[in-house]
Image 1 (cartoon, rainbow, N blue to C red):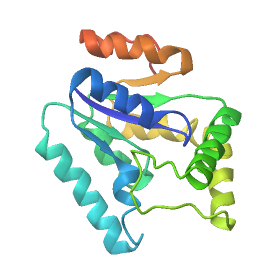
Image 2 (image 1 turned 180 degrees about the vertical axis):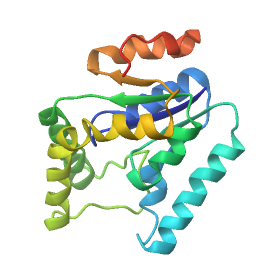
Image 3 (image 1 turned 120 degrees about the vertical axis):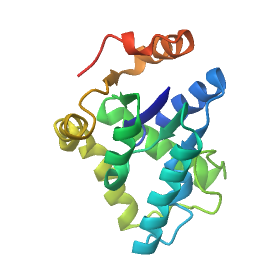
Image 4 (image 1 turned 90 degrees about the horizontal axis):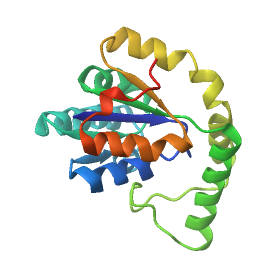
Length: 184
């Protein structure tokens, strides 16, 4: 099974991806880990796309890819067996983003899904990111289903809320994920 996890920053994608990996042993690619090792240039974007494609080719039967990155979302959608879209209220997502930034900055806790040398700066870019998190549901309510319909019309787009994660994980472990009830 090839799983693509998307959703607002702070929705719990990386946490759920690790739980799925622990339960299944499937290879996991955290996109943040790779992207934040780059210099964010055009060359880096091409290499980032190359890394994703290489990961998918290296694991033709099972993989988990965690992250949005709209410029390469279509490629993952075309190859995924299921697209898991985590849904959380925007206030929850913003609170989590601020909390993890605090943990990283004050307590020097490194996130397993983030590049080792990455550090957030409490500058304008950071506050623009927080605004991006706040606006994520509005901007993507229609955009993500449209992308999925265009690039992966046969692939289920599963809406997963906070209370659904345990049921989702159980269905993955049982091999019955495609019976998950909340589909678009």
